[in-house]
Length: 110
Image (tube, rainbow, N blue to C red; front, side):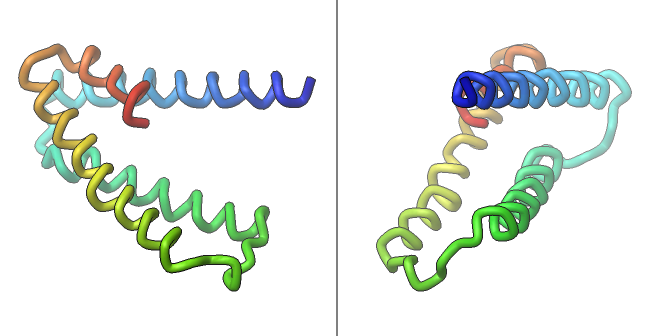
């Protein structure tokens, strides 16, 4: 039962993120907000990553001795290369689709 509840919590959180992002992006486009596209997408992701890391370190109590070089490099690869690829795909999609449709990419690249 707990697992089902936590899955629904995740679904609601992801859906909320998609909806909020779509609303904010369309309002900025409508009001001609002069925010750099990279800043518009990268800064919130960075801030969310920092918050997630801080909250995770408090509640998860990670053992730093259990970290390996391989896992650290894999995490850096995902953050630097796979994350950048996702953002580039998002920018490419924005040129071909509406703002709302482009925001739905968060279902694939959250």
